[in-house]
Image (cartoon, rainbow, N blue to C red; front, side, top):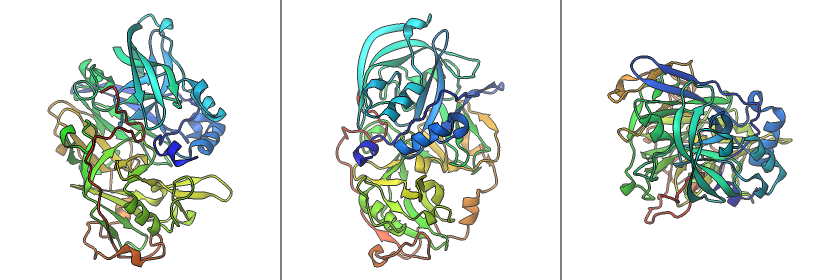
Length: 471
């Protein structure tokens, strides 16, 4: 698949007909919250072996889906969970797709017909949502929506029903900023809060590791058994100061480094930059000078014809990490999470990072290793290293103090394995071009210097599933 088709899409799809979500809906007297499972596209128990095989052959990685029931009686739809967009829409046009595989995926995600719902109102309003590739013409509807398996319903939610789509094969649940930021009506997150389904306008995302094959999103709560230590507070950059001038989940990153099995950390110089957190993007986007340097350290010969960095699969199970440092926390991504393995014979492995000099985005190859709470009340992101030691949801209220919401897990194996490594950015800086061999699987203390490009314009494109129209 050409890079133009995957870089700007960065999502996958899988047949979902056999997936049944189980929801925890609670009111403990101090707060109301709802937990929604997030299902990986490679989960054979949910989707079936054939679905996973076809999905991998067509889209090469994992996407994350939630089930919603729309209308009365309920009509089930599977939508992609996306922190990078702002609106909910369903009903992709499967006939517009170019491959039989994509058509089958599209047909499996469900559909919605307002004529079959006694609570539906067609509003007579239309819009066009444009993506990096593809688009969706929608008409707006109001209807009741239930997160599948829950006992409470959000009433008369405004969302889009597609009337025509181009190269779109799944609906999207956009959970970015809504009313007065990017939309002229309350979006899904706004409504959950306004209708009392969550008492604090905040949600927590733990996508889960590849091996777990499932994660969860908690609306109005945080799960203290999905991370260790404290949640680091990262202010969300206001739209007026952000790289693209749009209200998104932009935060400041301090540095990136590589810790190979030798534990001799390599620091990439001048990697301080705003980055955007996006569950709707499969890959991570970084400037090409940086991705080239990281790929070289993983032994790659450079971009292939499809725009990806192929690396040796012997690295996949090694105990090394790529590290992303923020104020108060460093997220350490194991090799087997940052690399993508194709089930070919023999297997092929690719770096889960691709070059882009205009938009720095941390997608699912980063997000799987982080536990992140998005607090829209006070405009902060709270972040910790993801680890899973059970389930213990804690409701969030308007006066909740995140400094008191400590993780109950012991340090993750990644954190313990890197305890002896220096990931603070204090190693000696040298020119990375001096090294001609892979250091991801060997010893090195070198570091690279490069310059992050500056953002001077409002981008009129999208990366992943980031909507920039209809704002």
